[in-house]
Length: 175
Ligand SMILES: [Zn+2]
Ligand SMILES: [Zn+2]
Image 1 (tube, rainbow, N blue to C red):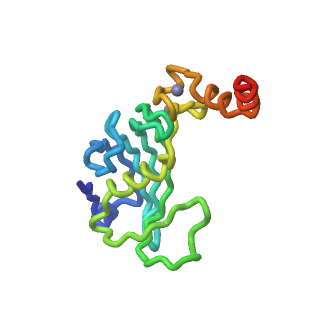
Image 2: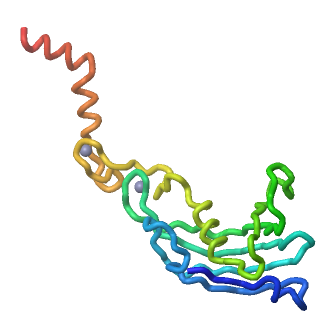
Image 3: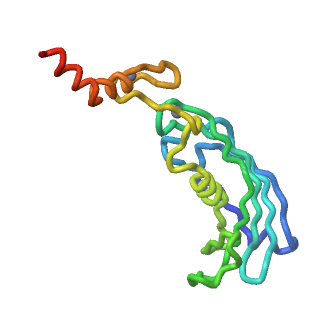
């Protein structure tokens, strides 16, 4: 669901605007693997410039994600600050405003969709393969148990069976 701000109107009298928004998680239309922990809180600061608007956004958001190794759900904090330049001119590659600034084309300044920017930020900040812990041990491919909770010896067992010594001792046994 879009959350539209009419920037043209807002800046008729003001040089900058500073506001707080609370965006319901469902309104962001995030992919289904995202589960909300709370609404997203955004502190937004916008300055009008010649060719567009400089936007600074502090946002607070937590999501519930599935670990890429053990498949358990865990909470991840995606809060942070994003600086974005909304350019009224179509962008040509190369001529940008410095490496740290994210520049986007603002198609319609009377219908700026805040939710779209917040949605993209959340996606950008989500790791490709989220992990509940860097040392997560994942799931045992043999017995299927979560190795963080139920360490098993399947893999060690397997390795022992396939070791050259095991083969040798088998040969000796059969003699
Ligand atoms: Zn995990
Ligand atoms: Zn196992």
